[in-house]
Image 1 (tube, one colour):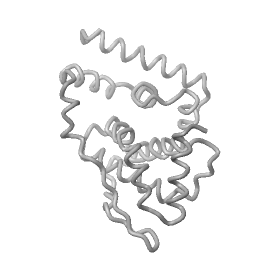
Image 2: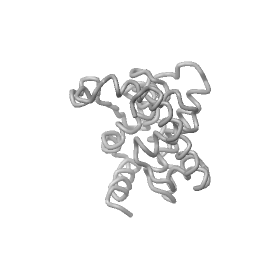
Image 3: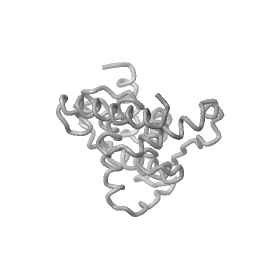
Length: 192
């Protein structure tokens, strides 16, 4: 078990013992990943923030079902992927979870940082980045999803297989085909 996995388990144990404030450690650690994935699905900043909050609320409410048979991050990604799939199927804006929520005797507050003010992101060539994001958005769902997990978030092939409930060879094929689709689209737009 890696140090990161051990830290996650320690935080989960604290939350399950009643220290719901400890969950803020999980939020800080994974909010960027969750937000980027949600944004890749809806392409709307505010909606992606709302979805991120929903995913974290769903996660904390489901912690008692985490059996520790896989890494916490893999379990969290499964929640994220399934939530986004279901959200997209609904075609309607999901209900927004209040930032304050009672869980038993405890009240907790979720605070996600507003990344729109991040000046580092402005250093990157905005037009090129916009085109790449646009082309990723235009990929078929299966390829967009798998490329986000592998190439943007750095999830391993085995973890992706577990998250998406695919066999390892299907994961490799989809990643290869997705990269080829993206490469051809970027080539057609003169970026490579």
